[in-house]
Image 1 (tube, helix red, strand yellow):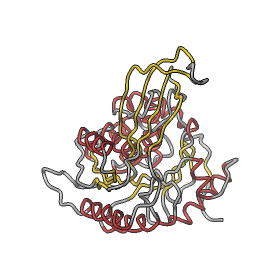
Image 2 (cartoon, one colour; image 1 turned 45 degrees about the vertical axis):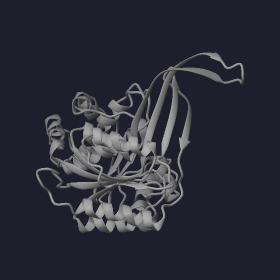
Image 3 (spheres, one colour; image 1 turned 90 degrees about the vertical axis):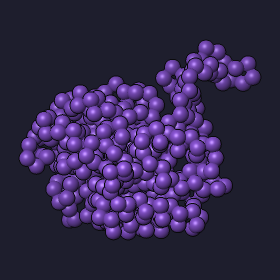
Image 4 (tube, one colour; image 1 turned 45 degrees about the horizontal axis):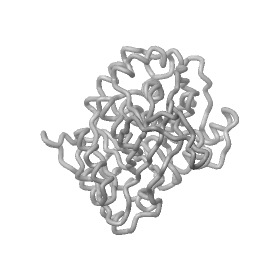
Length: 358
């Protein structure tokens, strides 16, 4: 295939994956500490009609934008991270987990009086029973926002060296709605990244217009409907939705992720394409969107067309949903799923629909 639409070359896609090791991305977003308690249920509590979980093991992982960082590193890319944690024990744990990935922590800002977001999930028999959230969604103070922006600017302008190896190919903004991305902070962030010459991929939550100038916008279908106020019942609705997204953010490429239906891809002025995904045995969809944007950003910056990047991202997400908990995909796992992802994509027979203004 020559333009990413008339066929898919497995060897070419594998070369894009090999090139991930040459891509260094800057990630900014809300970090979450994901805690999992795994156990068994064999009785009901005598105190109340609730199951008693006998905890067998526990794990603590980076979630939220931290999971995007984990996936970039797991896929073979390099990454630097700008985020915020509280000055608490959970914040200490987040920093430890970031350091374990060999990702620098100098752009992680610690804020007094604000808790590090922690989500605790109790899982029994591969089923999530309950989740406890410890967090605040209050907007950051002006002083804290200024600290974050100063850290981002220093990171974006850092001089490449043998020790830091910082020569960013692009940036990813991951909004989990925890207060980091106010409209003002987004606008200033976009200015910093534009001045640094970095193409920006955005996974938005409740804001669009402030991201104007982004190179790629990747909401899931539910988020896209909420952001635009357009319910999607068919391809015409989806094309209208994408036109509204682009009206607000500018001429960005758009990928709308659709779970088991794959992705709808709108690259430049070309007609939109449904890039379907292979059927997988799904154990947990938690974090699959983080995997998708990590793979999309890496693949694009490694030279893939957006359709090629979507096929690679479908394979990566397919590997993740077969695992329980906030998971990542390795290059070998993605390569193993590429044939099925290419076959499922069906680019030649996919629906094409225009998102150009009518």
